[in-house]
Length: 141
Ligand SMILES: [Fe+2]
Ligand SMILES: [Fe+2]
Image (tube, rainbow, N blue to C red; front, side, top):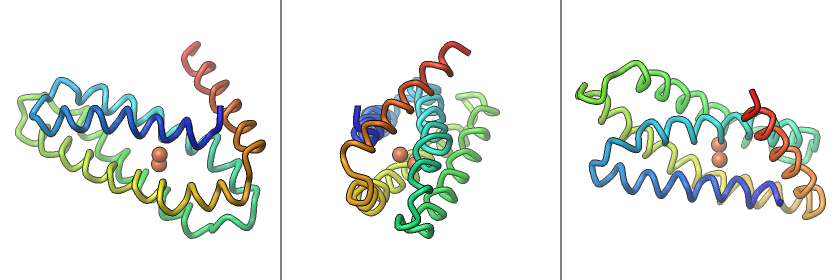
């Protein structure tokens, strides 16, 4: 499957969970943390290294995306330290979802169109296959 289509599907799945969170359903927080962590890992371990090989994809754009990942990961690790009845649990989960929404918007509006233009459909399908293999290997442990 096309790598960018796969990543956008993850964003959609996360958006579905963020909507539930915005209706005060805190039961989705662990799923948000695990889905987002897996998504970030696939981007950092497979997708970005592949597009980094192309010097014509803006290094600045990737550097900024990585800084946002860093903030998301800090929040996720802090949320995982807290009990759901802690007042900061809901607050941090809310900030996490706002940051992630902003981040996904930037990826979809700035980075992905540039990557699609530079790499083309065939290369994106090859990267997508690598991402699927990476996920399957992770699931096996
Ligand atoms: Fe990302
Ligand atoms: Fe993403």
